[in-house]
Image (cartoon, rainbow, N blue to C red):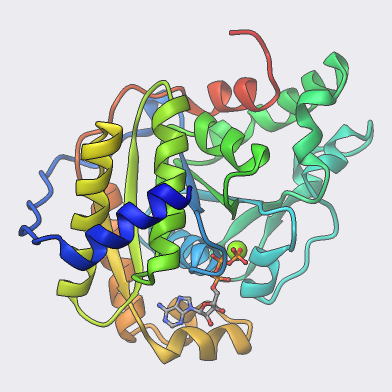
Length: 299
Ligand SMILES: Nc1ncnc2c1ncn2[C@@H]1O[C@H](COP(=O)(O)OP(=O)(O)OP(=O)(O)O)[C@@H](O)[C@H]1O
Ligand SMILES: [Mg+2]
């Protein structure tokens, strides 16, 4: 890790930057195969995952998509906090006989539907066969309710986070331009390159001051992962540094709702366009495949 960090910092200082290619355009994905399962993750904590997940959910909803957010960050119920909402039950309550999907599925404000992960999900692989089956049975119905399932994971390389990103069909890796965030993002890319069967990971660069800064970050990570991991990564887009984000967090309102014309909100619209009309979809496991992998069922 020290080695990677040193190399990356060298690259950060010395690389020559290439202009980034434009994303190819294709029609929006259809939900005939079930929902797209997209994990939003990061190496370093606090880089903006939850804000991006919640605001993306709102904007995707406004674009006509049925979205479900799963808060899989075990430390804190972050999605609740950003929405100024409070869920009574979380995902693991589904283990109880009398608790059904409708009891854990929150119809949050701004049209955001979400499920709180709650602590304990990291032990999913240790649950009994019956417990895992019960969770899968109850959660399978989410597949019919959503076109896109966004999973807000914790930061870092913990087993739980890796399980989520390896089970998802698409991964969005959020970083800021800070060297520490870049180094940690690279560590995630490295682990992902080693363990992911199908590689589909894209970068979101948050808190940039201009497009050039975003492009520089992307080229650094692209060059490093091409050279050392032989893995190509694309960029989904970027979000500008914007005081409206912090203000909205304090008000416990998503910035897309509180400040719809802010620069950060406009960036979210850009990300939505990339998600819906961006590069072609690859083969996907879908929601059922995601659940089976998370709960460690043989395929
Ligand atoms: N584009 C931005 N402009 C300004 N501030 C931002 C921006 N994005 C995030 N922030 C600040 O960073 C803080 C952390 O954001 P957020 O909680 O979304 O990060 P996170 O990656 O989900 O954190 P954690 O790893 O703890 O779950 C926000 O409360 C806000 O103050
Ligand atoms: Mg978070």
